[in-house]
Length: 138
Image (cartoon, rainbow, N blue to C red; front, side, top):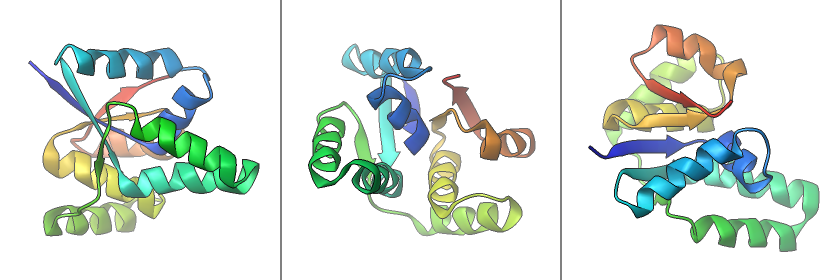
């Protein structure tokens, strides 16, 4: 069985910065090479990562991180179905979260992906109230 994961921005940042949980993300990415997993990420979450690096470290570092990310076995989801759009709106209206998180969670929800995150602050209440599967990296 192939597990289908959707990575959020904090999981990618943990991996890139070799923070706690980076080994969990690395294990998931490694599983893609043997065909035991697929990993996707919302374009909006990738924007969050790019923006944060650009703001904190400048354009050269942001481009380096973007290129590194695009070389990973991560499929970037750039389209948002109407069902995912509606689900993102419902989640955003129901819980305190960013638009990027609501989009990632909606994609996971309508597509059956497992969301990869470390963001307990925003996601713990969602895990308790929604049928979305979570894979916590820390």
